[in-house]
Image 1 (cartoon, helix red, strand yellow):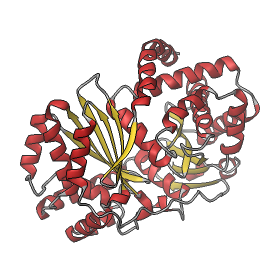
Image 2 (tube, one colour):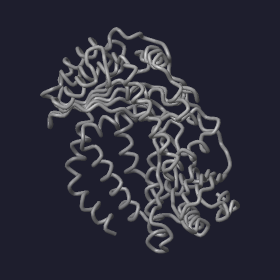
Image 3 (cartoon, helix red, strand yellow):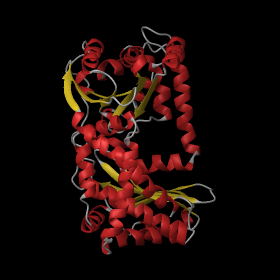
Image 4 (cartoon, one colour):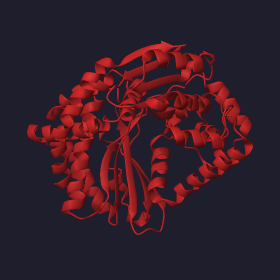
Length: 435
């Protein structure tokens, strides 16, 4: 009740922001500079500039031997470039308030720049040096290797992190997404400087890039900077691989035995991607399911303190249910009952409207930052059939009906593939494969 009250109160505060964001969408423009597609949204209300450079491909361009290589390159790129040593790069970043970060994703690798207008020139220089001119100093590469390998090893000791790895492997077995863009210990420890240099040279071509910029910067200045920095890149080469649809498969469960005080359970199932007309209804339905699971599993029955449902944003997309439970079978019976109820009992129009209002409040709150808007535009452009669908998504959410909720639940909330970490004796496999 507290969550709902807080979010409903936030609706009033978010309405002006929502209206501004919708109005600003008309200012978004798409153009090419030096053969690179650019999505640009000028924001004059603050001094922040958010840049997201996407390298298309992700897992489709990886093998078990190269898993994590783009993560490795991005982490090493700020530790020495043609123009800056590691210390010089770090000092100038701190002095100008420049933040550069990277995120490996099954569909792409993204490098983000957040800067302030007053130091835009210096920030862009740091960004393009890291992206285009890393030197991969051997001693720095070894430090980065050790850091990434240690982070990957730590996942094995964290049940939640390890569960996510196991669930992904189970969901995407035989699919390109089965290769983890975050990497594996074996791959990271085997990759050499020459491998990083070759990959950087072959994959960083214009046909694989998308640049999204949101902020207080002049288009003329932006175009000039892109031309100067990226104009000499090869037009083609190392093209992004294609992502096939997820093959249909029946429900399954795989248990990894661990002596733990509770069982960690994650079930994934195929869902529409962000560009699909059903995505908005599926997103609302998942949100409703998550609320119901929290109410029935946690609040009413006290079976778990951690339970939710979610929906990813991939070309071959998945939804999920997650719970930690001392009594897994009893808990799963409640979860499956709530999923079935989504299919058989129509939600009232009033309750649906409340859920949509709360959902859109959270959505608009995520759009209040320039980086949040850049992320939405980039995601819809690459995995949602075009950045214009970001606005279409909101319209589709508002148009969702009770019948839509039942339809998408019936269509997609099935054939759940469960990964479990815990006690195999507490798992009724017939129950876990019943939906």
